Amino acid sequence: MTKTLEGKVALITGAGKKTGIGYAIARKLASLGADVIIADLGREDASSPVKTGALGEMETIASELSKEFDVAALAVPCDVTDPSSIGAMADAIRERFGKIDILCNNAGASFGVPNSVMNYDESAWIRTIDVNLHGVFRVSRAVIPMMGKGGTIVNTSSRAGKVPPLFNGAYAVAKAGVIMLTKVMARELAGAGIRVNAVCPGQVMTDLEKWRFELEAKFYKTTPEEREREMCRTIPLGRIGSIEEIANLVAFLASEESSYMTGQAVNISGGQLMEC
Image (cartoon, rainbow, N blue to C red; front, side, top):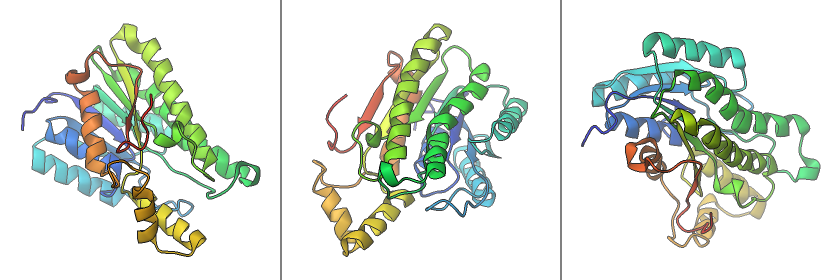
Protein backbone atom coordinates (compact mmCIF):
# COMPACT_ATOMS: atom_id res chain seq x y z
CA MET A 1 0.00 0.00 0.00
CA THR A 2 1.31 3.46 -0.93
CA LYS A 3 2.22 5.50 2.14
CA THR A 4 0.42 8.64 0.95
CA LEU A 5 0.30 10.14 4.45
CA GLU A 6 3.89 9.41 5.45
CA GLY A 7 5.34 12.25 7.52
CA LYS A 8 1.88 13.38 8.65
CA VAL A 9 0.69 13.39 12.27
CA ALA A 10 -2.99 12.63 12.89
CA LEU A 11 -5.07 13.11 16.03
CA ILE A 12 -8.26 11.07 16.27
CA THR A 13 -10.64 11.65 19.19
CA GLY A 14 -13.00 8.90 20.28
CA ALA A 15 -10.55 6.30 18.98
CA GLY A 16 -10.07 4.19 22.10
CA LYS A 17 -12.10 1.06 21.36
CA LYS A 18 -11.76 -1.37 18.48
CA THR A 19 -15.48 -1.47 17.75
CA GLY A 20 -15.71 2.24 16.95
CA ILE A 21 -15.35 4.51 13.93
CA GLY A 22 -12.43 6.33 15.58
CA TYR A 23 -10.36 3.17 15.77
CA ALA A 24 -11.06 2.37 12.12
CA ILE A 25 -9.97 5.89 11.16
CA ALA A 26 -6.75 5.60 13.18
CA ARG A 27 -5.98 2.23 11.63
CA LYS A 28 -6.62 3.49 8.10
CA LEU A 29 -4.46 6.60 8.53
CA ALA A 30 -1.67 4.55 10.11
CA SER A 31 -1.82 2.11 7.18
CA LEU A 32 -1.18 5.09 4.90
CA GLY A 33 1.92 6.05 6.89
CA ALA A 34 0.60 8.68 9.30
CA ASP A 35 1.77 8.82 12.89
CA VAL A 36 -1.36 8.65 15.04
CA ILE A 37 -2.57 9.93 18.39
CA ILE A 38 -5.31 7.78 19.96
CA ALA A 39 -7.44 10.06 22.13
CA ASP A 40 -10.42 8.97 24.20
CA LEU A 41 -11.88 9.42 27.66
CA GLY A 42 -9.37 6.97 29.12
CA ARG A 43 -11.76 5.60 31.71
CA GLU A 44 -15.11 3.90 32.01
CA ASP A 45 -18.15 6.20 32.04
CA ALA A 46 -20.96 4.56 33.97
CA SER A 47 -23.50 7.06 32.62
CA SER A 48 -22.78 6.18 28.98
CA PRO A 49 -25.11 3.62 27.37
CA VAL A 50 -22.13 2.03 25.58
CA LYS A 51 -18.55 1.25 26.56
CA THR A 52 -16.07 4.13 26.46
CA GLY A 53 -12.40 3.94 25.54
CA ALA A 54 -10.41 2.96 28.63
CA LEU A 55 -6.71 3.77 28.91
CA GLY A 56 -5.55 0.16 28.76
CA GLU A 57 -7.31 -0.49 25.46
CA MET A 58 -6.07 2.85 24.08
CA GLU A 59 -2.46 1.92 24.87
CA THR A 60 -2.94 -1.51 23.32
CA ILE A 61 -4.31 0.05 20.15
CA ALA A 62 -1.40 2.48 19.92
CA SER A 63 1.14 -0.29 20.43
CA GLU A 64 -0.46 -2.58 17.86
CA LEU A 65 -0.76 0.12 15.19
CA SER A 66 2.84 1.18 15.74
CA LYS A 67 4.13 -2.35 15.27
CA GLU A 68 1.88 -3.30 12.38
CA PHE A 69 2.43 -0.19 10.25
CA ASP A 70 5.82 1.02 11.51
CA VAL A 71 4.51 4.41 12.60
CA ALA A 72 4.69 6.37 15.82
CA ALA A 73 1.55 6.06 17.93
CA LEU A 74 0.59 7.74 21.18
CA ALA A 75 -2.39 7.12 23.48
CA VAL A 76 -3.58 10.24 25.31
CA PRO A 77 -6.60 10.50 27.64
CA CYS A 78 -8.88 13.39 26.72
CA ASP A 79 -12.27 14.49 27.99
CA VAL A 80 -13.60 16.79 25.25
CA THR A 81 -15.88 18.50 27.77
CA ASP A 82 -12.93 19.55 29.94
CA PRO A 83 -10.66 22.37 28.66
CA SER A 84 -7.87 21.41 31.09
CA SER A 85 -7.90 17.81 29.84
CA ILE A 86 -7.75 19.04 26.25
CA GLY A 87 -4.89 21.38 27.16
CA ALA A 88 -2.93 18.51 28.72
CA MET A 89 -3.48 16.44 25.58
CA ALA A 90 -2.27 19.31 23.38
CA ASP A 91 0.85 19.71 25.54
CA ALA A 92 1.63 15.99 25.24
CA ILE A 93 1.24 16.12 21.45
CA ARG A 94 3.37 19.23 21.17
CA GLU A 95 6.13 17.63 23.25
CA ARG A 96 6.09 14.34 21.28
CA PHE A 97 5.41 15.48 17.72
CA GLY A 98 5.56 19.27 17.63
CA LYS A 99 2.71 19.51 15.11
CA ILE A 100 -0.62 18.16 13.91
CA ASP A 101 -1.40 17.73 10.21
CA ILE A 102 -4.73 15.89 10.44
CA LEU A 103 -7.41 16.36 13.10
CA CYS A 104 -10.37 13.97 13.19
CA ASN A 105 -12.99 15.22 15.64
CA ASN A 106 -14.80 11.93 16.13
CA ALA A 107 -15.67 11.77 19.86
CA GLY A 108 -19.41 11.49 20.41
CA ALA A 109 -22.07 10.22 22.77
CA SER A 110 -25.80 10.35 23.42
CA PHE A 111 -27.40 10.64 26.84
CA GLY A 112 -31.00 10.65 28.06
CA VAL A 113 -32.49 8.71 25.15
CA PRO A 114 -35.03 7.71 24.07
CA ASN A 115 -37.03 10.82 24.94
CA SER A 116 -39.06 13.50 23.21
CA VAL A 117 -37.88 17.10 23.47
CA MET A 118 -40.70 17.86 25.89
CA ASN A 119 -39.62 15.07 28.25
CA TYR A 120 -35.84 15.27 27.83
CA ASP A 121 -33.79 15.57 30.98
CA GLU A 122 -32.10 18.97 30.75
CA SER A 123 -28.73 17.84 32.10
CA ALA A 124 -28.63 14.94 29.62
CA TRP A 125 -29.57 17.31 26.78
CA ILE A 126 -26.82 19.74 27.68
CA ARG A 127 -24.22 17.00 28.15
CA THR A 128 -25.03 15.43 24.77
CA ILE A 129 -24.54 18.76 22.99
CA ASP A 130 -21.42 19.48 25.05
CA VAL A 131 -19.70 16.27 23.94
CA ASN A 132 -20.77 16.24 20.30
CA LEU A 133 -20.66 19.95 19.39
CA HIS A 134 -18.70 21.90 21.96
CA GLY A 135 -16.08 19.14 22.05
CA VAL A 136 -15.35 19.75 18.36
CA PHE A 137 -14.95 23.47 19.05
CA ARG A 138 -12.71 22.96 22.07
CA VAL A 139 -10.38 20.39 20.52
CA SER A 140 -10.11 22.35 17.27
CA ARG A 141 -9.27 25.55 19.12
CA ALA A 142 -6.49 23.76 21.02
CA VAL A 143 -5.03 21.96 18.01
CA ILE A 144 -5.23 24.49 15.16
CA PRO A 145 -2.23 26.49 16.46
CA MET A 146 -0.15 23.34 15.81
CA MET A 147 -1.39 23.04 12.22
CA GLY A 148 0.32 24.58 9.22
CA LYS A 149 -0.67 25.14 5.62
CA GLY A 150 -2.00 21.92 4.17
CA GLY A 151 -3.58 20.85 7.44
CA THR A 152 -6.91 19.07 7.30
CA ILE A 153 -9.77 18.69 9.76
CA VAL A 154 -12.49 16.05 9.40
CA ASN A 155 -15.44 16.30 11.77
CA THR A 156 -17.78 13.37 12.36
CA SER A 157 -21.36 14.56 12.01
CA SER A 158 -24.26 12.23 11.18
CA ARG A 159 -27.24 11.64 8.97
CA ALA A 160 -29.11 12.66 12.13
CA GLY A 161 -27.73 16.18 11.63
CA LYS A 162 -29.73 16.45 8.40
CA VAL A 163 -32.76 14.20 8.98
CA PRO A 164 -33.96 14.21 12.61
CA PRO A 165 -34.45 10.82 14.25
CA LEU A 166 -37.26 10.21 16.72
CA PHE A 167 -36.55 10.61 20.43
CA ASN A 168 -32.86 11.53 20.05
CA GLY A 169 -33.19 15.29 19.67
CA ALA A 170 -30.09 16.48 21.50
CA TYR A 171 -27.82 14.30 19.35
CA ALA A 172 -29.52 15.49 16.15
CA VAL A 173 -29.25 19.15 17.17
CA ALA A 174 -25.58 18.71 18.10
CA LYS A 175 -24.71 16.98 14.83
CA ALA A 176 -26.52 19.68 12.83
CA GLY A 177 -24.37 22.16 14.73
CA VAL A 178 -21.25 20.23 13.76
CA ILE A 179 -22.17 20.68 10.09
CA MET A 180 -22.49 24.45 10.48
CA LEU A 181 -19.33 24.63 12.62
CA THR A 182 -17.52 22.76 9.83
CA LYS A 183 -18.62 25.40 7.32
CA VAL A 184 -17.67 28.27 9.63
CA MET A 185 -14.22 26.81 10.25
CA ALA A 186 -13.74 26.14 6.53
CA ARG A 187 -14.39 29.81 5.73
CA GLU A 188 -12.23 31.10 8.56
CA LEU A 189 -9.28 28.76 8.01
CA ALA A 190 -9.13 28.78 4.20
CA GLY A 191 -6.69 31.68 4.23
CA ALA A 192 -4.35 29.65 6.44
CA GLY A 193 -4.43 26.76 3.96
CA ILE A 194 -6.39 24.48 6.30
CA ARG A 195 -9.32 22.51 4.88
CA VAL A 196 -12.30 21.47 7.01
CA ASN A 197 -14.92 18.89 6.01
CA ALA A 198 -17.43 16.63 7.75
CA VAL A 199 -18.66 13.09 7.22
CA CYS A 200 -22.32 12.24 7.80
CA PRO A 201 -22.66 8.49 8.36
CA GLY A 202 -26.01 6.79 8.29
CA GLN A 203 -26.42 3.43 9.99
CA VAL A 204 -23.00 1.98 10.89
CA MET A 205 -22.41 -1.19 12.91
CA THR A 206 -20.93 0.20 16.13
CA ASP A 207 -21.67 -0.43 19.81
CA LEU A 208 -24.08 2.52 19.72
CA GLU A 209 -25.96 1.05 16.77
CA LYS A 210 -26.23 -2.36 18.45
CA TRP A 211 -27.51 -0.68 21.62
CA ARG A 212 -30.09 1.16 19.53
CA PHE A 213 -31.38 -2.08 18.01
CA GLU A 214 -31.60 -3.64 21.49
CA LEU A 215 -33.49 -0.62 22.83
CA GLU A 216 -35.92 -0.60 19.90
CA ALA A 217 -36.45 -4.35 20.22
CA LYS A 218 -37.66 -3.91 23.79
CA PHE A 219 -39.97 -1.05 22.75
CA TYR A 220 -41.48 -2.94 19.80
CA LYS A 221 -41.42 -6.31 21.61
CA THR A 222 -39.31 -7.97 18.95
CA THR A 223 -35.64 -8.91 18.49
CA PRO A 224 -32.56 -6.77 17.71
CA GLU A 225 -32.07 -8.84 14.54
CA GLU A 226 -35.57 -7.96 13.31
CA ARG A 227 -34.99 -4.28 14.06
CA GLU A 228 -31.78 -4.45 12.02
CA ARG A 229 -33.63 -6.11 9.13
CA GLU A 230 -36.32 -3.42 9.32
CA MET A 231 -33.67 -0.71 9.18
CA CYS A 232 -31.99 -2.36 6.19
CA ARG A 233 -35.28 -2.13 4.29
CA THR A 234 -34.94 1.68 4.40
CA ILE A 235 -31.42 1.62 2.92
CA PRO A 236 -31.18 1.31 -0.89
CA LEU A 237 -27.97 -0.73 -0.63
CA GLY A 238 -29.80 -3.01 1.77
CA ARG A 239 -27.27 -3.26 4.60
CA ILE A 240 -25.69 -1.52 7.57
CA GLY A 241 -22.37 0.22 6.85
CA SER A 242 -19.03 -0.76 8.36
CA ILE A 243 -16.61 1.35 10.38
CA GLU A 244 -13.96 0.67 7.72
CA GLU A 245 -16.12 2.28 5.04
CA ILE A 246 -16.39 5.47 7.08
CA ALA A 247 -12.62 5.42 7.65
CA ASN A 248 -12.00 5.18 3.90
CA LEU A 249 -13.97 8.39 3.33
CA VAL A 250 -12.19 10.17 6.18
CA ALA A 251 -8.81 9.14 4.73
CA PHE A 252 -9.81 10.62 1.37
CA LEU A 253 -10.86 13.92 2.97
CA ALA A 254 -7.63 14.00 4.99
CA SER A 255 -5.45 13.46 1.92
CA GLU A 256 -4.29 15.57 -0.99
CA GLU A 257 -6.71 13.64 -3.20
CA SER A 258 -9.44 15.96 -1.88
CA SER A 259 -7.31 19.11 -2.08
CA TYR A 260 -10.09 21.23 -3.65
CA MET A 261 -12.75 20.25 -1.10
CA THR A 262 -13.57 22.28 1.98
CA GLY A 263 -16.72 23.14 3.91
CA GLN A 264 -18.53 19.97 2.79
CA ALA A 265 -20.71 17.59 4.80
CA VAL A 266 -20.46 14.33 2.87
CA ASN A 267 -23.18 11.70 3.23
CA ILE A 268 -22.18 8.05 3.56
CA SER A 269 -25.42 6.21 4.19
CA GLY A 270 -25.89 3.49 1.59
CA GLY A 271 -28.28 5.78 -0.25
CA GLN A 272 -30.53 6.29 2.78
CA LEU A 273 -29.90 10.02 2.47
CA MET A 274 -29.64 11.42 -1.06
CA GLU A 275 -29.31 15.15 -0.51
CA CYS A 276 -26.63 17.71 0.29
